Length: 161
Image (tube, rainbow, N blue to C red; front, side, top):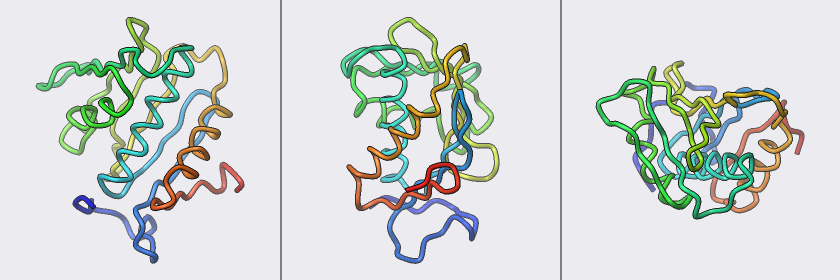
């Protein structure tokens, strides 16, 4: 497994599995924390999948992050796996306040940023909140939990499991 990230006491698990924590779920986005590289990769793959579903696209469509300011510059990927590997260049502690646009193809869909609460994780929301996506996010989290039994998911009180 990867390096452990600094966590507040309430985000630690006693069973030592990496943790994904749903901190907030809204009609147009969510805040999700992770505790290490394995759980970060799960979250970033899930965010990529949500973006593709909202766009009506499939894996293989270009996903890109365009930061509002950054020495890193934009990143793009042609698969969800590549996106989860490249996105940490922008979504990390050092660039905590750097907001980015998440694009599918040329279409800007989400505003996304690393959490600014001394936590490792992301906050993302639709740029045009015309359609509620809370059910889509919930479904994606439950699917990610089912695909990754080695990762613990804390979804209550937002999603009852």
